Length: 235
Image (tube, rainbow, N blue to C red; front, side, top):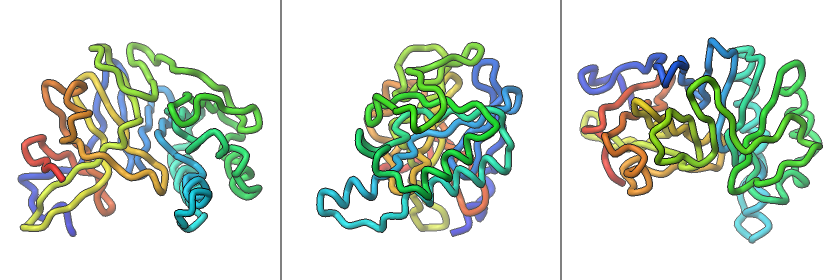
């Protein structure tokens, strides 16, 4: 479906300000911070496929390679000097040990020549040294906090965890896509992981975070679109 079919209801997403940081949303689900030369990603959920396979739910075992390939293409596009992964980068406590040699080599190649910061999440509260980079519970860039789980506090923040997705109706048809959930003080990022899924931004989990409302930068086919909150549909 062509999201641009109704220009009055959707417009191409642009860079926006959060606190004193300029943020550029990307089709991959990443954010680029040009003044910081930093790429921020959320919820890679590496090795989710193998975790499900261990429970007898057979999924194609290629999600880690696909996710890292997407991340690699995004890094190539922006050439950041720093990458920040906002938690749940690994699907469970055993995921790091299950990464195959090819995926581990891909990850090490992406880290080469740049700073790499892992923010811990509820799925990966500990990240081993073999994964490279530096491990933190959270950090601040200027007046903006970066963390895994969003907080209802008023300070500007970038977070992940909720895997926001939006459902809209265009030309009589409903469409559901991953999105950036935005307000003047908060950006909740979509999950980059190939198997990560998404939670509708109309879900009650978003309400305490966006009491004054939100807009959604929807990841469309080749473009990002900012959708007014009045056009966001429940599932």
